[in-house]
Image (tube, rainbow, N blue to C red; front, side, top):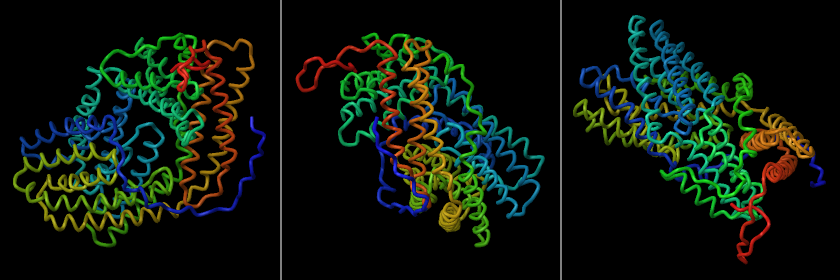
Length: 565
């Protein structure tokens, strides 16, 4: 271990620069970009076309509430996806119920905006505290906020909620349908990602350029793979084979210099295909290495309230920012203040830097989107069927493109949202465009001001907590390593606990690094903790099971004493 003494952490706050470069850069499309896009169309089309045939497109807003639940949980194993989608549908219908009842009881715009901001804050907190993943709270907030300003009576509420619930059941079925064809698809993709990142790390030999970043990415991918595999209690033989492949990725993380990346890449390619799960050809996948899995499956889940505490600054930013954005829109006389509210709600990310970037992306995407709407509106106004088809096309485009960059998806989301407002009645395109531009600018500006005003001064404290967790997990693993014969599965569980703590530490440091006004971070302590933690991880990998066969030296072709990937 290094004997370097960490430098004392400065208590002086400092302002971090907000970047512009790269905010609009396009990334690679998601591996499954077409699945949420197709699910959205399959979920939205039948209810909308049914309402079109009945001449009741004015009810489409309520069915859309349930249909859009199909956008969630695409990366989850199907058993976990079933539970997650059920909760999303309940959350969507619950938020809609609050909005509709409020709208039926009062027409006071200030009260409606206040309730909308409160709902947005609750939705933000719950979505960030649970592993729902994108689109997070934005879709829920869009539906509940828009519903607040829909004319309503108490007698109509049960029927409208029934429409949303029925569409939600259909969305649940659409989300679960791929499991009939590829039941282990999400777990296979997560394992393939772990193997690919491990291969990239092995290619650096643990010392090349970017090795620290590659190591962190590999640890995060392995942790995500374990979370996917442990999300269901059914340990079938295919899942056990996937567990063994994740162990191979762990071995590569522990000994990158001795790992041949090619077998890892080959296994990843096979996992992305439709063939059986590839098998490792050495004893490293023996059950001795997986004894801790059953214990982890039996462990109780972390209580929700413990995850909500650290999110308090984000929830407060959302409540204040959304409320102020809505009030500012009302003061300007805009007829749809919920657009400003939703714009503000969409900004708030893990830190100020990411929030700033999202604000730039939102403004650019919305402004381009209203131009697209201006071009499409004359066609959409020709007949209701064309209007529905245009909305479906933009729905597909939004989900297909948003993974590359948020602004690109917003180019489709904006005209889709504007067209949805015309399901009840045709409106002047110029008026819609003007109001949307004003609300976008107001929501983004006021939302960012609220984000800067509500500081997250506990971000550095969370690093201290994460460091303590890493040190505790490392100490437990070290004690087990010192025992001549640890209890069955204990070292395996300690390994994954330490790996999870290291991933959490890196995520916490990244989040705190993006805060605008923050104390200097304990960077040296973090580096030392990560270095010692990964050394202990490597030791647990070597101790947990039989040593793998040696790999061929890349330069000489001779066998080396180490890990065969």
